[in-house]
Amino acid sequence: MTPLISIKNLSISYKQKFALQHVNLDIFSGKILALIGPSGCGKTSLLNCLNRMTDLIPDCLVTGSIQLEQLELVNSNIDVNQLRQNVGMIFQKPNPFPLSIQENIHLPLREHAKLSKSEQLGISEDLLKRVGLWQEVENRLTKPALSLSGGQQQRLCIARALTLNPKVLLMDEPCSALDPLSTEIIENLINQIRHEITIVIVTHNLAQAKRLSDQTAVFWNHNQCGKLIEHDQTKKIFESPTHPDTIAYIKGLQG
Amino acid sequence: MTDKTLSQDLICGFIWCVALGITFMFCWILFDIISHGIPEISWTFLTSSVQQAGRSGGIGPIIISTLLILLVCLCVSIPLALATAILLSEFSNSHQRFTRLISTSLEILAGIPSIVFGLFGNAFFCIICGLGFSILSGGLTLACMVLPILTRSIEIGLRSVSDDYRLAGAALAIPRVKLLWRIILPAATPGLVAGLMLGIGRALAETAALIFTSGYVDRMPGSLLDSGRALSIHIYDLAMNVSGGETNAYATALILLVLLLVINLVAQWLSHRFLYRKVQL
Image (cartoon, rainbow over all chains, first blue to last red; front, top):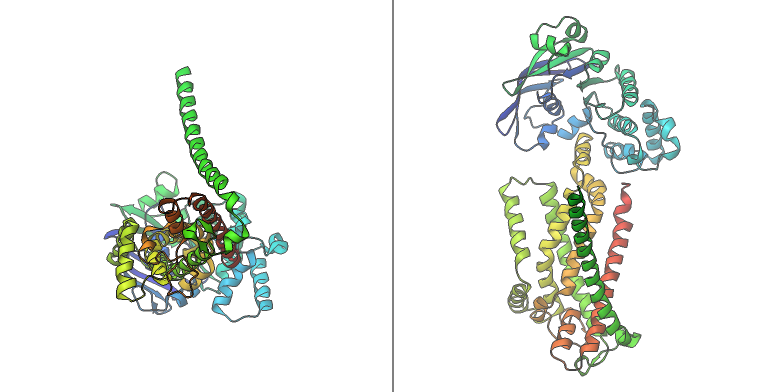
């Protein structure tokens, strides 16, 4: 099976200080890959490379290769906006725009397709139903998105990311700012869309990685630099890990 | 224990005194101006022309000249300040040499005394550009003067808008200019208006920079190339050079305050009408 995204010898540095070194990792279509490990070992940096958000960080240098269906992403002269339409992103802190609930969906929709008002309304209804938000917001679509609860805001952000029909969805600790109930709703949502979209999720919640993901990659800090120490099927990582740091981390002894 | 509460009470009392002192000072100035000025205010005072160097008659031409000078100043300075602030906060990072150069220039510009701006305006706009003593020269000189305050406060306003929106916009492949226009600028409206008011306040209060550029003439201006006297210069002249002009100086000062208030309200209304309404914070 050929991978959708193939990462080879990837290193990331900020101001000449390495955050992540020599990562080789394949991401397969229609699967969920969880990136786990202690803070500051380069998981988010890796995620940011996959949709070139690293371009926005001054003094960030990326070397190596990331191929998305034969398209080279690292330091190449590609259309970044085209890439970001294919690779969506959900942030740790829910960040809906300070607009109405429906305008949050309509804004990116209008930007990338010519649609009539009624088509826009139809699509936003579909998307809000898909993320299970429709019943909660049906009567207040023109109310501010910032008046929603954290969990609702995060679901709105997922709906907003889905407006572009991305092939890949990057999620940077999408539940870490949410309560357990909202987390469960988001996890159910991820389970619903997992067959249509490839997901890469960073999480500090080991149980979440175990519940959700097909594959797991474990990152660790060696000499103040992030390394990928082990990656395999999630079942294998949690039942029979091989690297001593992984074993300690999974058992909760370290990290 | 009692020592601690005593010192707390002392500090608390001191802070209250300071706050009351500031309020008292403001009210005193306001009361002084209003009580002396209000008997002179009438519709004729607002509309008729200056007579006997201001001892009698009204301030009609002065108000018109002031508004025209302010209009020239704002028409030039707002677009420049907005563009510079957007460049500094949205399209460059503070490590770049070029950005630092602009920032440093603005800081130095902000510290230059207004009389120096007056001399520069006289030499450059009046003489070299050949505009003479005119409303245009005065407005352009004021524009140079308020540019640093306006730019800095707009930049601060833009920077205070959460980076979350910029990240979300980038991740959704929304062009930066679109994001700026649709989200960032509207969300920064309160900051923009505050900056605008600081700039207008400074421009309305200016005398030194205008004496050499827009001049003293108290007739109704026929065009932007005529000389025109600003309210602040009229106040200065009445108070310092014209014996028996004090009451009209007070009345003019009151008009200046009211004008500032009106402009403030209009700016707030306009910005809400056209910008702030676009976001739901």
